[in-house]
Length: 375
Picture 1 (tube, one colour):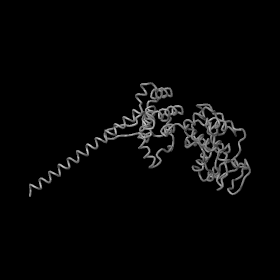
Picture 2 (cartoon, rainbow, N blue to C red):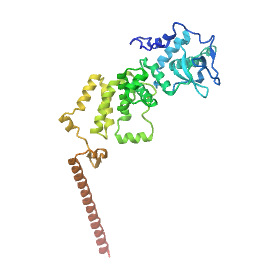
Picture 3 (tube, rainbow, N blue to C red):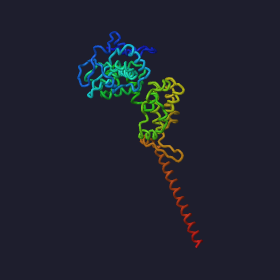
Picture 4 (cartoon, helix red, strand yellow):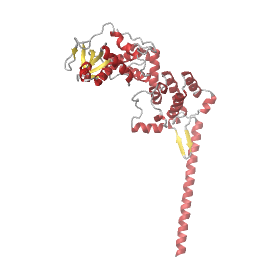
């Protein structure tokens, strides 16, 4: 059984150690004595074959949305020198292709070697050594993909959270403890990651991934219009620098802040959350400072409640905004105040219309009088 204990932090070769440790004691040549994969043939469980790289596809439940090119190249260099020491594992698909269960980075490294190889070297990197597993259900594909990525140092928390949520849905699990027991992960970590996925809005997800927050600097109405026009909140092609992302625990805190703004500033909740996250990134806030800020901003003190009174309606210049979702919970005093405001606006409109009618009548009378004098 493969040892999934994480490599020591700070080790420059941690990634490579994880890839080769399981087979270092008994390396196997990728050439001699290996079966060449035949798409139309059905294989027995655990058969190891050489699969043409053009028939290899990534696990559709792969948690890692982005692979670090430097890590892929580092592993490719090792494979070029010593060969593929550890077989990937995969599932044979109906169309003859092989979907990887584990070993996605190895596959990308071999593909890179094949792409950059000379004509004389190309045959050496034309196949990936894969151990075939038969009858693997989707839930197992996801579980094993999660296990493989648990030991990696650069898996984004948001990717891991999304995969856990997907696993929960596939297996119809209700509790975080059930997910943790099924996968073999720490329950507290699973609970936190699922909370990150379930309770945090898209702006927080983007900050964890390192996306540009500019698209979120909009009102809720503008965000809804943008979402209808197309998907602008997609994961980036590659993560940004570490100092442009927020941690998993900081994300939970900003999720609380967004929930607070949903009550106090519902039309600008995302915009305000994005601004505060941007400020935290620019000023380099640590987790303690984030927690202190969120606690202060969401304070339940009388001063905080008065300052953050829910805005059922707001008058901005000539625009009168009413938050219909908050009307049901509004106090009687607020409803009376809203009614008075509306009645006042209606009366002002009637007065303006009457004045316009009077002016129009005077103008008409003036025109008629001028016409009479002319005659």
